[in-house]
Image (cartoon, rainbow, N blue to C red; front, side, top):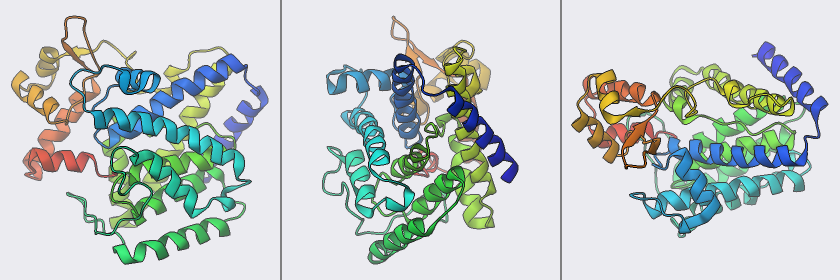
Length: 341
């Protein structure tokens, strides 16, 4: 891990040498990251908006007409975008991670659930939480206030820690407390990015396309006492963001540095028939899984046809694997895919 952190620190120095970025470029990056962070963080939790739909909702609010998508999904996009801006404000107000307060965390969560579940927005849960498909155990409700105070005390005690490792630890420790009835995953990723922002790192995107791998790292850490896979995933996300910013500063393409299938620019999108042919599944099955929220539509053609990223082919394989090996129902599979919520 030390070698990787050293490599990341060197890239951070390269970016610092290129700062300040031109205002227009910085504004464009901020807008792009706001959409990407919001799309990815919400999609991990099962939100059905595509990237393009997420961008539209952030820009126009609920006035955006998104056919077939729930008001809840649209509110989640609006709220998360507001959460990002709030995190930036906190980063400016607090001198370091040691000044983050318990109320700051509650305020982030309140923004996430406003208009969705106002009764519990910014309030600790009063019931147990369970995650289907996982053996994770979280503190009982009466232990939450004490666990959160310990979390803040731990954070205040940390000195001279590498910001990337600290951001990962904050994310992991918070998720293991799971203090809220809903929105824990989104809040934890915003907390991670609060730490990174405080130390002038670009915000890191945990990609929706890496969801299965990401969720598995929590189980590995809990069951095998091995947190390294989780650290690896966060380090890659931070490095990708640094690469993107450095490329932007040099007027080079940004998106190729995010390797992977998360961007629509990778190859052509697949029509439902093409996806069926590639995965040897029926169109009926794919349409049903889409309606159930297990598969995501990247965008629609002018004629209204659904188009899918090639990454959905891997998702289909995962669905079949969970059906055959774990004998899970579609509802259970959906919950499994939403493990970090």
